[in-house]
Structure formats: structure tokens, C-alpha cells
Length: 340
Image (cartoon, rainbow, N blue to C red):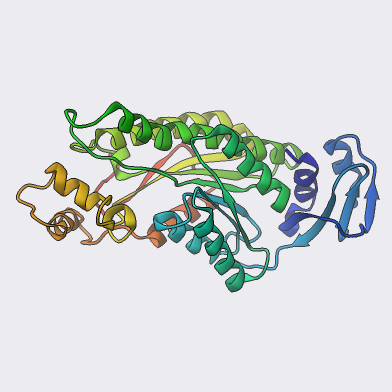
């Protein structure tokens, strides 16, 4: 973990700087044994670059973006396509720096390129990440710090859904759903919070957010979909527990529980999508086509439509801006699920 980059960024946090490692000739050369020493010795006005003796050269670039997330560094996992891609796109509109984290590096890189073309060079990067692999998640956070100097929001969006009855569900499928949706959230929270705690050490006023994209199935059981619902119920338990543990470091932990994103590949894929899975599993009585299944699920929503990325992004912005909210599971379901 590059504590020097974190220390520099937090020293000038009021400027919302981005810190990137470069090989340019430094404006300020400093000798520091520890990041604490460097932090104490940095001038009040930020130099253009800082060179740590025997270490890297850091360029300090104040954010030029505007918006509700100006200068914030955000990771969204599972952001190569679908809901994650849509969430990242909406958050970028509010001035953040984005890390597209996904196993599909080609698609994630394409998204980052599009973001840089739209919002300016250096706005976004793509990093390959397998959220079920601890070393991969650790590398994700370290590469983010090395490039942007810190981490302000981690959106744990990567997920998988395999439906089936007790009789049909295999242990292999059950374990896959549990590992991606439940265990991976623990791993991601562990390494994201490590960065955030260091930031709080250097800047006690710093706050950060860990947000799990959960599901309405984390609020209410789901017929012949117990592997997914169980993993999401467990996710809410982790959110509440992490919120209690991390609050002293200025880290808020919340879950967003969206309704169904009917238009994304999770639902619409003709071979692996939920509509065809539910059709084959017999979850919808008398349904003969995918369109029958879609109409059935739309009819269950009081607002008569599925959830879309902007709905979730607005809930994420609420979590980021609300200083007095942690450990919550917030439904974004068009009235389909209501808190008791």
C-alpha cells in the first residue's frame, strides 16, 4: 500500500486532488522515513510534484470536475456491462474519478476510454479484478491508490444469480453464488476499508463509503431462488456489522436493494438470463415465453417498471452525502418492497 500517495492526497484534500505517480522532475524533494513524516513536512500550499527520497515521484493535480462527487475516487466492481456499467456512468456525471473493475478487462477498458473522452483524460481507468480472489482484490485497491492517491467510495456491485429449486440446485452452483455475492463482499470491504482507515489517520475529517449493491431479495425471500436470496440476506448482515466496526474511522457502510433491472443482460440474455431461467424453472405459472415472464414481474411493481441505473445512482449519492446514515439497507424497488 502506497501510504505516501495517501498522505499527500489527504494533506490537500480540500482541493480534491488526484495524485498520480510520474517520472517528472519534482518541484519539491523530501526525505521522509514514514508517511507520517512526509505528511507533517509537506507545505501548506501544494507543490506541483513531490519526490520522496528513494521512492516515487508524485504529481498533484487538483480535480477540475464539478458535481456532487467532485474529486472523489470511486471503484465499481462488475462495471464492464449491465447494471454496474450504468451505475458507473451515472456517478461519473457527478464529477468523480472512476475505476472500472471487472474480469472482462476489454469491456472495462472500453468504458474507461469512453469516460476519458467524455470527461477528460485521467478521469477513469480499468483494472482486471476477480472479486472471489483475495490477491486480485488487494491488487485492485493498491493499483487504485498508486494511480489516484486514495479511495473514497467502493461500490460492491459484482454479483451472480443462479435460480433453482432445492431438488435442482447443485452444491457447486450454490457455492458460486455464495462466494461471489457474500464472501467477496467481505474481501472487498476488508481491502477497501484498509485504504480508507489510512486516509482517516492522516485526515480525521475524511469520510468514505462502502456500498453493497444488494437486492430486494435481500429484504424478502425468493421462491426457487434461495441461493441468491440467502447470499443477499447475508450481505445485509455484513453491512450492519461492518458499519458498527468502521464508523470510528469515518467509514459509512450501506446497502442499496434495487428492484429488478429488466433491461440488462442479467434478465434479458436469451440463454443465461433470469427470464429464461425462471421460465425453465417454472417460477411463473402458465408462462410460455420470456415475454410472459417479463410481464408477470413488471405487474408486481406498483410503479409498473423495473429499476434502472439512475435510480440506484441516486440512492448511492444519498448515502455519500448523508453524514448521519450507516448500516442501512435501502430499498429502491418502485414500491414493491417497503420498510417495516
